Length: 158
Image (cartoon, rainbow, N blue to C red; front, top):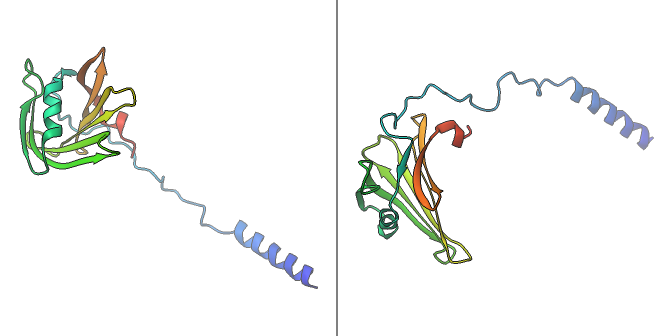
């Protein structure tokens, strides 16, 4: 008798789960990208060289410090703002700095210095704002650091 009641209960549960409407969802679970966002860096070139000495200055700053430097001696591209975060992890092998920009509305410049096992140093960083459709990403191209302009949705998935 126990087997029959268990079988009957399983059958009822199966029919109830087949007839439920919880799986019908007409709204997609992700946001559609807005490719019509305005461009923050439209008047700047696609590639901007970066001086390593300038990058090193950022890692010496403390939280709340004001930053106002040209990113390269031959460039008029300027980063101005205040340091909002300085983090060091893994025995100072990774050090990250976040700068809230005052000359690019709503943008933050985040940069990290990573000490690799072979003793070399790798830098990564982005100048990004959620309100705009373009981003600058720090890349190492032929042993020269360059800010490369990219589209926001090439980097961020919403």
